[in-house]
Length: 93
Image (tube, rainbow, N blue to C red; front, side, top):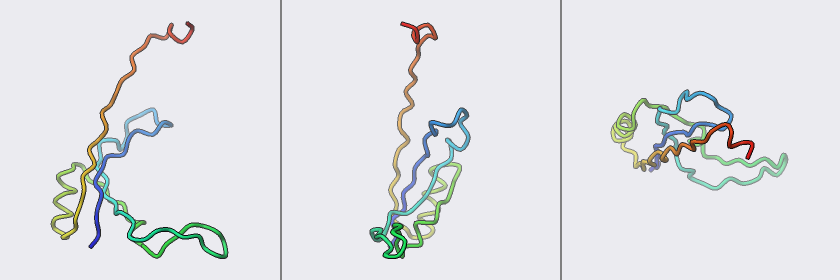
């Protein structure tokens, strides 16, 4: 039975805006370990659920979807946002 992970993506360090940081994402834990391909050396596996990623507006919507499908799930809470307040002049101390 697939185990789904429900979480919020953090803001990327290369992002200036907050696009898609409020959405909740559902993906699956890997069913098998990745192994190197003997010809190319690239890592891969036969688990196709690794390619699935679903977005939901709320965590409750993602949980309802998992329960309707009969999947086990874990909800990973969003990390606390810590603001580092400093003055521009502090850069020159």
